[in-house]
Length: 386
Ligand SMILES: [Fe+2]
Image (cartoon, rainbow, N blue to C red; front, side):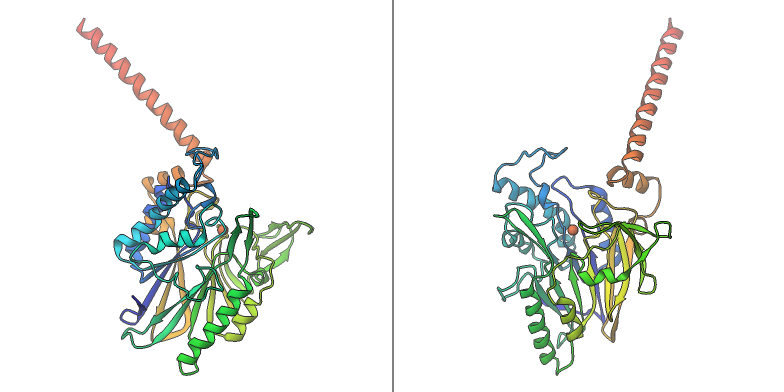
């Protein structure tokens, strides 16, 4: 079934880094359910690290391996994927996905994993007939409200894969995928009477040019972050406010390979923004060399993160597709801020360990006090009767 505008609007909801296991943190699922009901999107895109693929064999606590067969791992993978897909499937919302570095780190091939997503009726994309690229590199045309013509396009680009024989992970869009993008962009333009089809390009890991959005600074400057890469001297960076708006909780780390992707995007001129995940505590919109970069923070509670946990929304207007209209919704904006939502956040979110320990200790003390009071009361009553 093709994607199309609905009364002139097309709303995309991006969920990035939902990474969790078969034992899911329910606060994230509650947040996602709230997002779907609040935003009512036409498409949900899962932009990588959809599951914690490298921990599927682990025991519930710790990293001890308790699954020793590919079949066992596959079953756990299906359960983990179902936690994030069932809410959209149940609501009848079309969804699409691409992989992150965590998804592929296991015995299951990318195609086998894609088959799990494809088994849901609302799955879109994952259908590229061009076999020079990975299965999660594809595009999804979006048709006009009357269904007559393609007016928008969505690129999904793989940036992470594992060589399972060598046990080594690679990051970056492959050269073959860049070539495919160029060919397909030309084809779409041809079909559109020679005019470029405006589009969004989703990928998990930032490309090298995203690092242009940082500036060197002093350790004591506002927003300074320690930047360190093997072989390089320690230095300090922060978001360059002349080029970007938003928040940087960690330095931007683009992958190293030079695949010509950025130059291709500039040359084709059809991508209104490259939209990223992977960096859990970064959330900004910037422009470098005329290309817009949009970074979304993570959704997962089972990973490093902060109060930027949430989802990003894109609202496309069929009558004015000249620019991207986007905003981010955090956990508190979606779920509210009250005693229950705060306790749920502290209970489930990694990084809240001290508060969680204090809660448990507080609950222990309260339980002991109530028990002591009840025992004392019971003894007193017994005494009264005697
Ligand atoms: Fe990632």
